[in-house]
Image 1 (cartoon, rainbow, N blue to C red):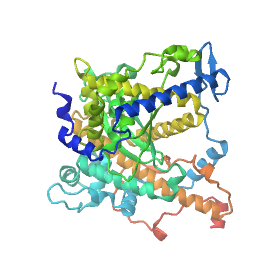
Image 2 (image 1 turned 135 degrees about the vertical axis):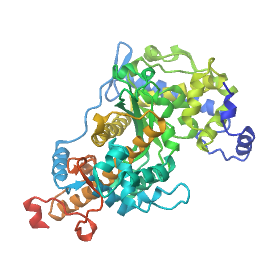
Image 3 (image 1 turned 60 degrees about the vertical axis):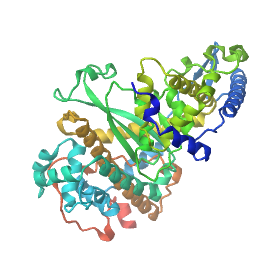
Image 4 (image 1 turned 90 degrees about the vertical axis):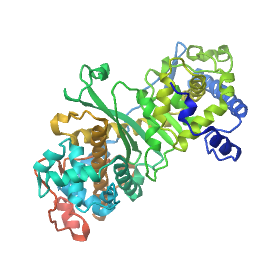
Length: 510
């Protein structure tokens, strides 16, 4: 094992940045000062939590036999929103997926980001480029896509895949669509683009693609792979990565926040339990972002304190091992060095997190990061018990990702949705193509959702924004994802848009 320092930015560079106050992290350079503030904050918040728990003043939380119990968050989608969603879904124009992709390209120019590996030129045959992307997204592959396409040959698709489709061009195309979606006025109804969630979605592997050592008991005896993706609060995807189902998702949570080129500035990030670890809590604090996971079995997780456990008698069942402040202070500069290496993209977060976890003997840096993470997790858990708004916000963020999984499953339909590629590169192309096509669908739906709402308002309907925020752009019933793909079909579109499907009453109003 190489020393951790060899994976980070040069120590001399870090020292210069620190001396010039250019680290730009979420913590101060003075470790003693940070620990003093953290100690005071943790003590105050724990005492307040204990008082509110004893007094029965925690909304949705009760204290039973010394244990805090959280009432599950109820669904927030009103019946009126479900009815409106069904009505608007019926108004979307019917569309073939090649036409949808072409229209989104016409609006955004995303296919132009698939530049030639040698010349940097944009694709000469946009239809072939789009077919190549759809071949990845649907799991058809280039040859089957050519067989299912009119006017596009396997050679043309293969050319685009060889000379234009790369990880960096997929990332640029993804950023193009996501940025256009972020800037669309309707997207602001779902959020301001500063929160996001990430989650893994399991896809079975065929026998030839399976690695028997990668079987995860969580998914039964089926081998496969997970596509780990990041989604903004506006339903904008901005990162995806294939990972082994046996790997911890926690290692990859931060990757998506840095390995992307969108205009999004994510400040708060949600995951489920699989994305959480004390190391991740620590890194989020160091880089200045907020980590808010939905933790399973929360009552069994302990608060870690600076003070003696009997300082908080009402919470004695929840108090765990004390914080080792000395360890954090002794390695404060090392922690800053690690965080600065991530924010400057000198190291991929998952790379360093896996190395910290894989060392035969846990390093002092890994222990110090865990101690810092315990402080941050304890503060977060206090807020989780105290704030129903936080619990609802996290639940809403994760619900968006879980709903988007259904659309991905519908798009990735061929070969029963099984991954048949052995190589990481091929699986990465499948994942990137899937993310890109789903993003195109989301953006196309958003454009027509906005036009449908405008039509309803023009007809005199009251469609309030608080109701609209529950109408997602994840429908696909109006999109033909299968069959023969025609890539250069001519369509009459007045004003550049398809006509909405309007019921009789709305047609008269129009």
